[in-house]
Length: 165
Image (cartoon, rainbow, N blue to C red; front, top):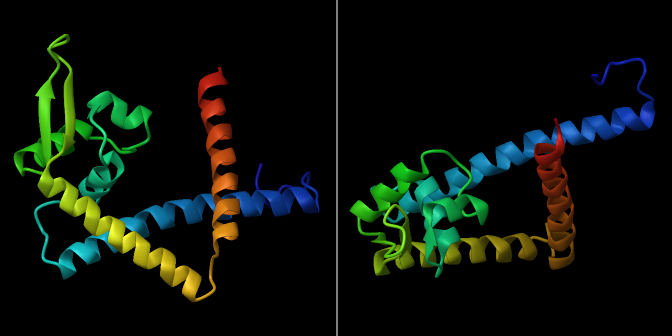
């Protein structure tokens, strides 16, 4: 079914067009977020980690997690989680420790160096939130409405993955 399908009525075409716009916008926003982080790191001369790794540090925060938990808790969405964790440990941004119970399992947490990067991103995101509000682009209510809509879409997609044959 496409937007040009004669079987779609006007409201169905509007819904489909809006949905496709949302999909494209979500992808562009994620890529832009990574570019914003990259630009900030270039500004402060941090070149040894990339924006995906920095976002991983931000999302882990003060938690101690296993590699598997990174995806289930929503801290990391990409592939190559093992590579990124290994790199962050090697560069001193994270500590790792093997589980005493299951020697295959490794728990990771931020080092002081990792917490500094997380703090930089917290400051960056705070400046952006304030800038959006100051320009009148998005206020707290608009942000909450967007978040609720995106969470509903996330739940719907999760259900589709779990329950489609």
